[in-house]
Image 1 (cartoon, rainbow, N blue to C red):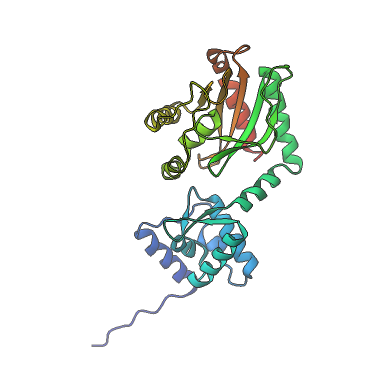
Image 2: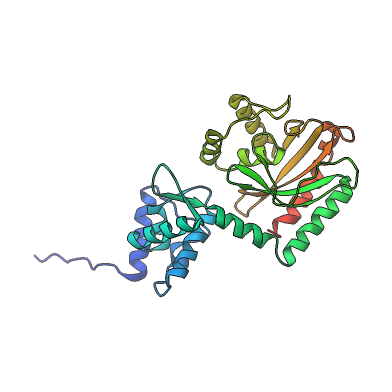
Length: 287
């Protein structure tokens, strides 16, 4: 009796079977960029490099080389060379623990310059201006940049007494309203990595320098969906921050207001929580 030999799958069938096997092993491809959307063997090195950057930029943490290979369908040897070149150029960072890659400083710089260019920047600034006029205090738009918080736009209050920070300024992550918001809402593994690399420097009498206490504060932020700074960064300054989220619910940026305690108490600033959330929702489509 002759046994039939199954035909070897090729093309689309092979791609689907490879992805199924990978998922059975616990490897989940990115939802936004599937292998079939990216695979195009006619692409040159530039196209493949852009595919890698898009996938890493859309991930919530460092991606292993094996995951990238499955998602891009680029051979591992070619992919390793591409990632190495992107690391040398500063567009990717390689994880110390193994062949995993995350967003590098040059890619963050490119994203920052893109955000601050063109019509969308004007529309974002208009939303910030409207919020600042409504609350009569300084409003800030920030993003996470490595282990710091980066200011990408802001509208200052018209009062003589105010904290002045230029666009492009960086502030600590552990004692600012936006910084704690990022620590609470980014993936837990990434948050833990950041906390392991920073020193909880005491900037004021109210700065939290206990990792256990900070962890409890981050849990509170996760539950309530907003973050406060009660004179932890600058004495005499309070702040409130809310997230601006991606379609999948992950945090993309933070919107905050801050004011001196001589004009606004912590209880008073909390009254602006709803207007802040409304402005954050309006900004979602402008990032």
